[in-house]
Length: 298
Image: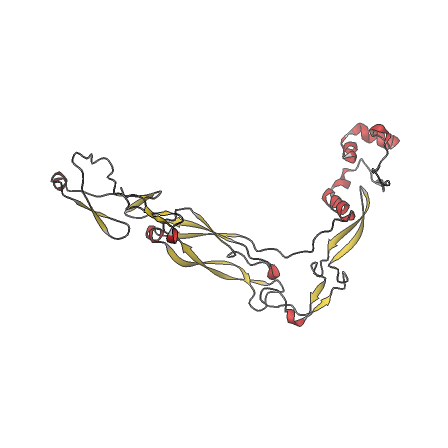
């Protein structure tokens, strides 16, 4: 913070160039409560802001120098994927048991996703002497620090497999088609997003797989229109049968038919409601039903 104050203030930079001490209370550079001084000069030119271009590395080195060690590298988890599955309104009504396939990375079948063959054994990494990390001494704006970084030769494992898998080039995964079982409960909505855990991209060298987010798209129906859990259907009527009070036959999405009676004095410009003949309510009942409840048919 003190260094930044100098660099960002022209007057303070000038004072530092001339006198080397600009802080209140007469404190010199590098005063550390309860400890010694750190010389932060090392040829640093306050007028050259290019020296601050690697600030994140400087602070990494600072904290690692205080004993804050980075964890050994773990291989990257597979990426999450998103796909779209188109279904019919009838499939949304009944529910669907099927599978979904995506082109992605899958675990290598030859090496079991490890990228090497464990039974062939391992050799201690000569680069890091089996420690999995390498200590480097660096000069920075704040002084001299020891930085510990993960060994790039063994990826922080401290040992190197004697035999790597050539099928996956030691990565533990290959490009292929991945299939996962898909269960859609009755009443699923258009645009609904389903999370399929572990059905995404395979991770590197045994790391966990990502998830697949499947978005449902319902095709338009030629007869029924859906609004939430309700369905709407248009029906041409014989006005003489209506006036005679005869019941009319109404198709349902389940494939059956219901007989409906139009009440006397009913305004034919209004919608006629047939209770319980709409879509299943998507919820927590058996097979996704909410105690068998359904929307209405208009």
